[in-house]
Image (cartoon, rainbow, N blue to C red; front, side, top):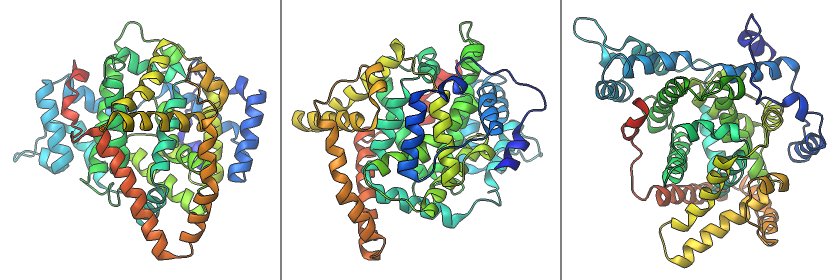
Length: 425
């Protein structure tokens, strides 16, 4: 890891935005509780070194330059409709399809991005990608509860994260639920076996999201009210790395709280899957964790670097997240059940100070119910690792539960990047 840190350090000092508060948070009683909590759950206390912390701090002022070049090429140098057509063509048909018979290319930056994506790095290990999918499938719906009711909802306590959403109007109407649904679909595609193969759904989605982020960044950097000194660059590397760690380590953390066990090879496989996804999405993948200890270090850094400073946008996001479950398909009784299910899980996952800051509704003591599953979950996990037939059943049942959540959220609607044409305006 040290060599990775050295290769990503800038030769000059980089300004660090005010939102990065690791130095102050690291010395608090809350930090001490988190360190011992990680020791209890993972067997390791976090110990990130100064070089990694500095790299993380600097990453809030760094972006995806390659993705930015493509966004400029497709949506500033040509009409948005033509840019969308070329993007779709390049992703679905490959970089070579962008070349004309005379050897010229209308979108050389896009060609270079996709050409690089089509050549899988030597460090990618297919056996680890397959193990990651099996590990995630075994956890079933619990994996998605951890991502939504812990990572996403708890993250809203940091208002800095919500700034791009607020500036682009992504908090209006039903767009909050739509955005969560689309993120759920993306997660499902990436965690499908073979999902990151060239031109598979997860692969295609990763590149689309990369360009979408670049479009948002381009818009917000031109916004007169965007304050980079306070928040960092829009959709910066720091937030992208933190999101990647949420998809991997925070999901594992939530599942461990519910009784699931993870061997070192399981954790390393999940980290490997999301490291490769990060590579495709333009993240600084060299900084991402690869081992249990490094994953714990990253969880701690993300927690300590984030301010608990919810504003009205954060509160709107948090409230709309839970209320959206009242709109899932089904009878009013079922809708109420799903709403309370997520209300209870969020109460179990999210610490009291963050729940209070977000004005999350009380669970009247029901937040302890998820913990009662732990002995059953632990036993199933233990047995499945010794009985292959049970393991196969458990993974099949778990993936079916994940698929149901995705289908019920999308309600038969396909996620189409071309619907996002407002980003190009």
